[in-house]
Amino acid sequence: MNVIRIEPFQTPSAFDRLAKEWNALLRRSAMDTVFLTPAYQRTWWRHLGQGDLLILVAREDGELVGLAPLFAVGREEQRTLQTVGCVEVSDYLDWVLAPGREEEVLAALLDFLGASLSWSALDLCNVHRDSPTLALLPALASRHRWSVRTEVQEVCPVVDLPGTWEAYLASLGRKDRHELRRKMRRAEAMEDLRWYIVGPEHDLEAEVEAFLHLMAVSTPEKAAFLTPPMRAFFHELAQVAYGAGWLQLAFLEVEERRLAAYFNFVYDNRVLVYNSGLDWEAYPNLGAGIVLTGFLIRQAIAEGREAYDFLRGSEPYKYRLGGKDVTVHRILIERDG
Image 1 (cartoon, rainbow, N blue to C red):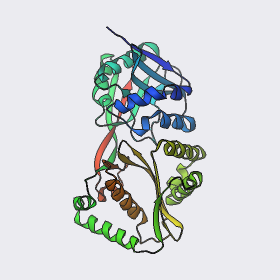
Image 2 (image 1 turned 180 degrees about the vertical axis):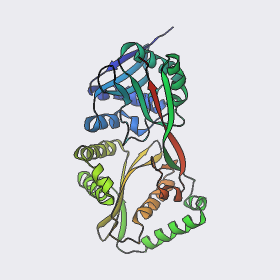
Image 3 (image 1 turned 30 degrees about the horizontal axis):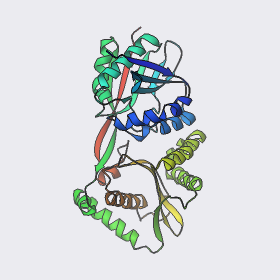
Image 4 (image 1 turned 120 degrees about the vertical axis):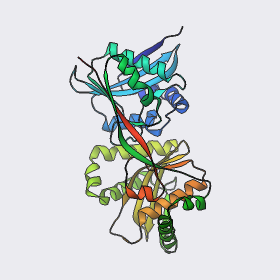
């Protein structure tokens, strides 16, 4: 009988060293998401990581069957282990598990954690409601006599896209459908209005800087959020995502003044709305953010995308545009003694 063996990696070089087989396993897993790619995780760790990196790799007869990208914070004996990416800017996180082998791999990872490391809590954030980890990990942890608590952490409104734009409009409430149509028609009638997605003809660095400017002027909270490390993270993430073909950086402008922008990912045939920027002072009656979202949803439908995922947050506009809540959960495991 083959045994699942766990090997810890503690240096950032592991993201690149494991990338090929990590990506292959992720694509097969139940919870494939851009936030668990080694490219995203490496970028997050470089700019926003703290504490001690601990990537646990599970192999059976040499084959990769599981991966838990963790980091540890706190003093010895009181350390908390979290998933790389927790918590603020990574909307879906998990451990990467071979399909059909999730329970065995999770059990092996917990056995390793229980026998080999000093820690007091395992705090996993933003675990999708459909995750095998959420379904299986609490019971497995209880076998070790550890205390386990799960809770809904946030909601992610998601629009399941139909085959046509008219079918999408028909799915909205009457008032919301009327408002979206009215705003988009008014915008399309403006002679100097245009929207675009950043491509090879653009200077990506300059476009990201323009996006960050729009983010900063959106709200005081977003301005405070954009610390120097966070700005550097966005710049590198844009380069990484663009190179991988995931980036959808979109702008709406009138007379060459940028009014709204979205930093999205297109991954696994879904559009993920990662962050946004809006100039509230220019053309306040236009509804620039809604107009640009409408254009992007219409394009996503034309391209045959499966879903338009607004990611974490319960802002009202997401529901007016058809979002239905998907929950993400926190799993907190505390180790007695």
